[in-house]
Image 1 (tube, rainbow over the protein chains, first blue to last red):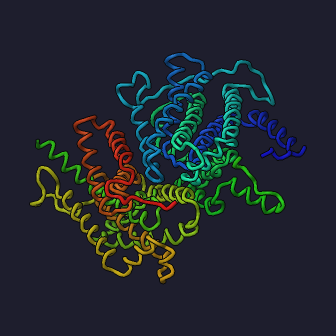
Image 2 (image 1 turned 90 degrees about the vertical axis):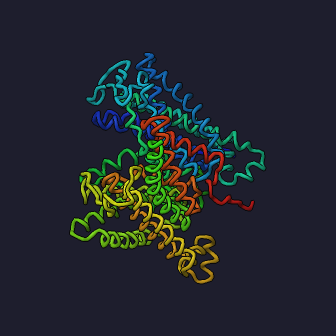
Length: 333
Length: 290
């Protein structure tokens, strides 16, 4: 498949978007920058889960666990071993890859709801394990670990805003997120991506075509966990604090919400999903102080009515309607 | 020995509760092949209704049956109004709608009835011949109520025309529709029944754990585990699964690893069992045609 030829307008749009992303942190207050950091981090995590759930069809309610492990790996390495913050990301990714790969083995035998339970158990067990007394020296127990935000290597003022720790982290996170998205895109558009989709759609036919099912499925779990682990490490660096109670089961559910809201099996969808899970709870809180989660739930259900296939599914449909001649959007890469 | 027996019996009592939540999950699973994540919060909400009725001066058993009836209607309406539009949507869309329901019910319960922890009365007298040093009369009573529910359900599905129609609708929706069964309504009745069972479970558990909006979150998980352990398509298995989970949880907590990690270990054990026996202990092995 040759890549579709892009028009000049397309490249101009890309360039404008890039400039907007670079200027954005200087247009808003510090707290907003922090929120954008979290959006980027959640986007990586949602992308990771999407590789597993969207592309490979394995449901996980336990990705909060990998996020927590990644976060703790970064925190422990920075706080106890004195590693520089950027060096913790690959370690967190590798650690989570290994754990995810191992988790992939029981997942081979469990389908659908049973897998959901197994991963849910993981999400529940990890915060408990982090509180466990025997490893308190490493993890800080219930108290968690407080980190220092990395200082920017140089400072300047732009648009009357200082280039401070949060803005530096914004660019750092943006770079990592861009790297992860390119990685995912490369991984999923080729042979491996096709194999994962084939396994999702028809495992028996996929095996018959010579796809090694156990290897691909557990690799998908590993890669997905690695993405989420990197996101977790970034999260620890940006929030500068980890504690077992910040990684509840609800975090795992939130990631799944992000995947479905953004659009299953869609790489750009992860961004929309991340924006939803970061900002909609705040908006709900502004609408009703007394029952914010009820408003959130109504948003969630309403969105599922309006776009049962997520934001990207909706966009694809709209594009098909406006340009009937064009082939349906192939966001599946 | 006494201590061991004590742990086992209190495990059985908890197991009853898990079993009844599992039963509610199995009901909805059988009808729709979905797992209702909002089951626990719906049960909690029902329990709050019972509490409000009792605050208004209704006697316990009147409030009990009124709550069961209200919950049945509520479940029916939730299915008709909220879930029907996504009946044909992908599974994960449904899961997200369930999560939406979960946060809505949880939040509404907190908003209407406040987050303070409330005591919920037990219908069974404190002192009775049934109470021994191993278990309270509430334990025995709730086990009896739960077995009654199971018996009634069995009779309902086995001997009534509507039960038969529901089984048909669950097993083969297309053929069932062809013989004139209103499949979509059968799903709604399934939801109603599940909500009613959940309400019973909620009212039985509330005297033990006290009533607050998050009362069921842990219990739902055990119920989920129990249902899967027993086999998600087998109501009897769900109850047995509940007992197993309850006893395991207590024994492991008391003797092996302490209460700190008891949730984790119980779950790891369940996942281990499932890995060896993927359809649950009493589940039907599903064979699909290629």
